[in-house]
Length: 464
Image 1 (tube, rainbow, N blue to C red):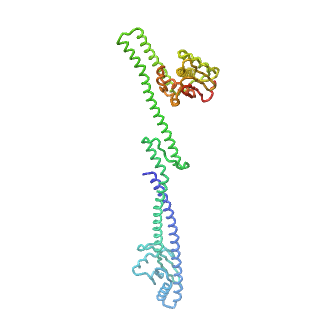
Image 2 (tube, rainbow, N blue to C red; image 1 turned 90 degrees about the horizontal axis):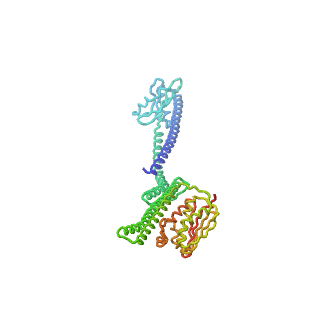
């Protein structure tokens, strides 16, 4: 059973129970008031008839007793309209006069035994007020018995009960219709929320529930559901991007490994199959060594990237920029000499804070890329300011469409140049990961033919 149906039945049940109880109280009070009025009327009529009988009997006192009493009773009953069913008896219980039909003679057996009392009794399904009144006339005692018909009171009560029942039934039907319409409108957001949940369950993570009144519970539930759906969609998106990046990473790594491995296998197979001159053998061994060193460097960078995936915080220590520049410059000195590159260094006394080994690796990778991009005899500029380290070259530059992808693993803006210089597209990915672990970011500015500037920008100036 749907929630709206249950709410409708519960509300309707409460309303019908309340209205039925209220109607019952009103009907009972109305019935009692009408019955009391009719009972009072019966007693009053009985008392008036008793007085009339007394006066009539005194008026006919000159006649013989039995005739006087009988005529007095007939006259009193005749001229007392609405007296009901009447019987008059003397003190011995002999019937003096009655107006009961013959078939209703058994009514006399219902005369109350207590003096001056009344009782309510049904006779052949008709309710009567049986009244007994004892009175005395000229030293003689008489009993007046009246049967006052109360069927009109009970019939009226039954009619009122039927009318109340029909009214309550009509109100119930009307209330059912109104509740159905109101609850349908009220629970419509829940229905739409259910549909949105089913769509999300089917894989449509962009599905959302309509925003209703945020002040009511349904609106707040819809808002909370949408927040949950948004978080779920973003999480699924991240998982998909991570999965795609992982697959791409593995594919790119396999591709990058294939080139040096193929080269090494080719040279080794050539040396195995046929004798070679010393110079050719030296060239082959040199090529194998070069490709092996490239694989080693690639492995080291992959291990460093994997190690930086940990969420453990770094131990940041105070240091100067010069403590980073000197080891990094020494590492790339041989590569710089090959291309006759000059370094311009400034800001070595700037105070920074971080993991020294990781920051040296970052700066080394930036310097390596700057040297590779520079023309022979060019210059590379290395500087530091509070919260900022800058590496700038005057080399070939990078096209704008490549700038957003430079920190992606294995991405190469110029694949032919990079491979010729034993690159693998991991240097900037590693540098970017190191920057993030220090609460910093890498910013690239470049223009083809005019060089590239890379800034290591900390979130705020870092002091020891």
